[in-house]
Every structure is written in C-alpha cells, then in structure tokens.
Length: 356
Image (cartoon, rainbow, N blue to C red; front, side, top):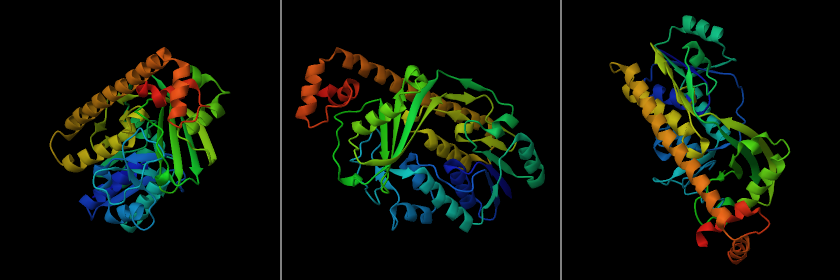
C-alpha cells in the first residue's frame, strides 16, 4: 500500500509516523520543499498526541538530550518548570527540534522524502506516478492539495498577531512568575534549550504601523521579565480563521491548516492537525469516511470558533477594566509586587488588575 503525504512539517511528519506504525509494510512518501528545519517558534504539543509518537522520538525530546519540557497550558511565563516524564502536562518544544526528531525517526522507519516545491501540476504528476491508496494534504493554510480539490474557504473575521523569537541565558526553570492571572495580550512559551517565543495579540492599527515593531517586541519581553535576550526575530501576520467546504475527495484528505485554521491564541493549531490525523488513523477504512470526516472537521471548527470568541471577548473585557483603573494605584501595586514599572500602563494593568 502506498501513502503520499504532502507537507513535511509537524503535522505531516506526525501523520506519516502514525500510519507507518499502523501499516508497517506500507510505502509512505513525504513531499517537502525544505531540506533543513530552522523554525524557532515554540509549539505547545498536548500530552495525548505526544504520547502517541514513537518511543525513540519521545525519548530524544525529554530523555538524555532534554530538548523539550512539559509545562502547563498557556498563558505562561518563563517560570514554567521542565517536569520530565510527567503524565499530565503538555510539552513545549522548538518547532525545528520536534521536526528534526520526527524526521530522523521517519528515516529509520523507511519513510521516503522527496524534496520539491509542490504545485498543482507536479501534484497531479506524482499522483499518476505513485497511484497511492491514500493522499494526505498537510501543506498548510495555502494548501496546493486544497486547490487541486477546488475548495473554497469560509473566511471569518480577521485577527492580527506578531511573533517574537529569542534566546536567553536565564535558567528558565528557576525564574519567578510575574502574572497574577490570565491575560490575552501575550502568549509566552519557552523550551529547555533556552529558546523563547512570545505571540502578541495586536490590533489592525498596530499591524499596519511599520514603525512599532521594535517597541512591541521590547514591551513583550519586558512583560515576561526577559532582560538578557539575544537573536531576536520578529514578524507580523494576519490570522484568517475558517474552514474549507471540501475536506476530502476519493482517496485525498486535507489535514490541519489545509482544512481549517484557527487563532493561535487558542493553542490548538498544530494539535488540531494531530487530532485530524488520529481521527483518520482510527476510521480510515470505515464506510462513508469522507462524509464522517467532514462532520468531524466541522465539529473541530465549531470548538475553535468558540475558543476564538472567548479569547477576543476576554481581551476586550480586560481592556475595558484597565481603562477604569486608576493609573497611580496600578503603579503602586506593581511596585509592591516587585514588578517593573517601566512597562506601558496596559501591560502593567494585565499584571495587577485582579489585585485591585
């Protein structure tokens, strides 16, 4: 049996490994345009999915090399302690470290890799050449496989974000938390390798301002108390949550961002992709699979939409509460709690709003 996987990111690799374990004698081929994995973003991998990875991958990530660590769900501060061998918590891991570990295991298991930029024409040519039993489109929000299926995406309200990656010499597991309660401006992640990532929930006005990048990054790092950062990289992006109208056709299935996208503040992007893989893993040979998979995707989308609404609503409520607080009292409470007071008022308010 031949299986063709388009996209060799975390979801595509997870898909390939899971189906190779399900069908050991199958011939699985991954088509990926990158020869090296270099992405510094920190992913939060939920425990149920991490536990299904091959033992060698799990051992490498939290074993001798200790590239990853288990931490509580976001929002997080850099006090997140690495709890090795924990059965209950999730894993925070640099994207490239996860991809490299999974790819190494895929090579050992005999999974083939083709390095090429996939297009609609090259996809059709591969399909004719390989005659696969199944095709899994794991090639992201701008999926070529989705285009081949002539899908249309129902786009919902646009959100805006900014990412900041960095490295720090601060012992992450020994630092103290500054947050008194959840907030919805930042999401911070750290790995055991001292890589850090902060996502910032920004407005359209902030997104369009080309001169505020450095200041936004500076405030985000100050918010978490990171003073010794280096190798800082920043980028802005639009978030267009939505779901496509056609998630499968015949032998072809769209997985993860190819089928549906969500606000990254819900901490469910890559995990939704893993969840799609697990559903296909359990049901791929059943009758009416395409119809049932569509229902499953819609259910995921509904949950994601609710989570997005909650994040946006809570963010607006927090801003409204902050606007009513006395700036002098906020600053006094910040000093009392040992929090740096050179942060903008909005960030200080997030830290102490529930203490006032």
